[in-house]
Image (cartoon, one colour):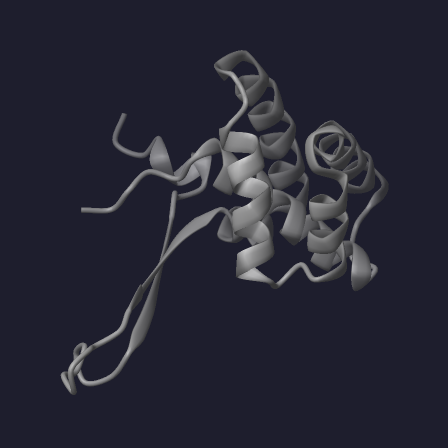
Length: 135
């Protein structure tokens, strides 16, 4: 069974996707504004951790730390921050949605094999346009 993506994972994924796109010079003005709003909201809870994620946007452990910071907030704060993360992901397009995912790594122990080798599976929610098909 796949665990749902938490608000923290959504926010951390959006931040890392935005930071990676910013570093590559691939953000338009609207995306830069959305990234800045989200970053400023989260930096109040864990400035050093957010800056570290910004410097290393591909780091899963740094994403996990930021996700944990967000997930400890109350529901009202999480709802507000999730809205900012979704706005950034909308500006990033499909690349931003791919960042908000759950990573599961299967590692065989005791000399066994996990489907022939160790594997990492990524699960992400489909873009909003795809999730409404069939309605």
